[in-house]
Image (tube, rainbow, N blue to C red; front, side, top):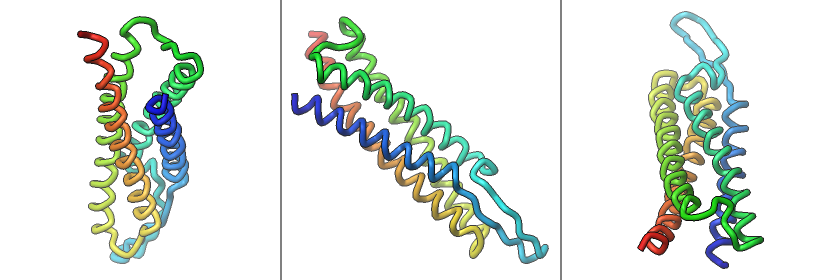
Length: 162
């Protein structure tokens, strides 16, 4: 029972932090100065493709996490799996694997573009890029937690298929 509750707690924590990351990302904007051309323009998160990709991976991960939280709550309260037979164990295992890779690619893409753009636009847009770093850090941290959940769900497979 303790491992079920730990997995449920980790999934709820994952949902909450991904939701916070999504809110920070969606409200992220800043001003970029181009002193050579004497221009200042506003840039939003949707102007950067890697940030839009990170948003998409975050939304997909939130949807999966909500589904898993519901399944975990049902399992903790009743002791039965929602999906009968061995399908539930496979869904947990493969779902956690796929979502962890999705989170890894979204966070890594945002980290890369933030590092490159911060160098190019040195001195301007720091708020935008600092928030980008923060969101990417949260996403990569929860990639590690989802990968840990994937390892946890892999322990159930050999027991079921021996």
